[in-house]
Length: 374
Image (tube, rainbow, N blue to C red; front, side):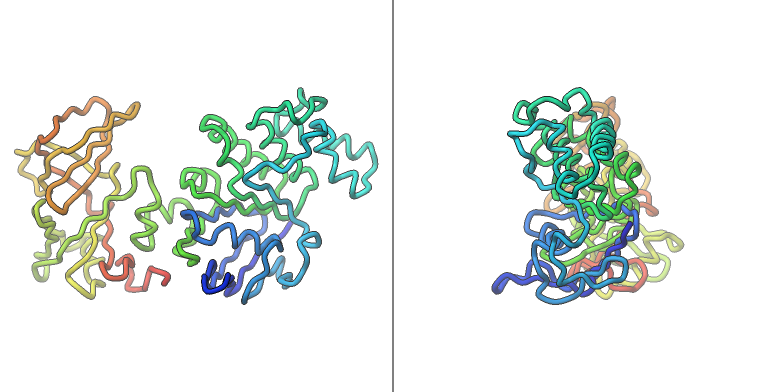
């Protein structure tokens, strides 16, 4: 198999820097997702790994060997594009066998691999069907199988599920993970869909404007976002990010939220430890909607007081929006929770689930290190 090292990798198109000083290590047999909005540099990064684009500066190493100048056809990779790349005039069987015939493999070996990959991709009953008669979903399965059958050490997938329907995307997330386990390949997967990244990847590289924002496990980037961009990008609905001001002294610290009131901060809480790294009293407070507890306005416990402004019932849960002035929040509740528009609620947030960020830089305040990439 193969590991991938990207060392101070940059790519410039004219005056635009698509990828800026990216350093990233993908372990052998690891599934890594490059995640970010359109134009963040994730596809350009993949194209450089593939050899389709050449770096402006920096190095690309496979198993420690610099392959930056190596042509794409010498890199031993498989590539699946957003738009399925298959020969529609050939049958499913002929499409799967094509790369193996070009390599001159014996007929028995070609047939063995075709049958195996067709079974893995659930195309066994369509082997002799013309590819042009497949559904869009089946064509994308064929495109993945056509690249996987060559058993490349490195498998690159550039938003392969963006053109298929939602039910098939959910199905293929499971299938792709099974495929990687079966073939034991190093996979790099480009996506703008954080659900795909969270469910598939061993680690996620979150990018924005060509810059790596955070690289970690799904749990790390979700539960400990490095900055406000990651906090906002990960999660559906995303993390509540609310401007706050630090006040008080010693063990009597508090966060003030303008129209919503203030929250005392326990002296021995994780939130209190974050406060010590603040270089300014102006911070951004973060909490996930699912970590919020709601109660009636008359509840005497310390919490924020806000009116409900919008209610979204979504299957087994309900998302309730709250707001007053500049303070806007969302909370996820069970379906049976009931409220009316304008009804006031007390909002409680466990200090162990809350986050603080520097308002100027967006960096997380948690260890004194700069948790933001500029």
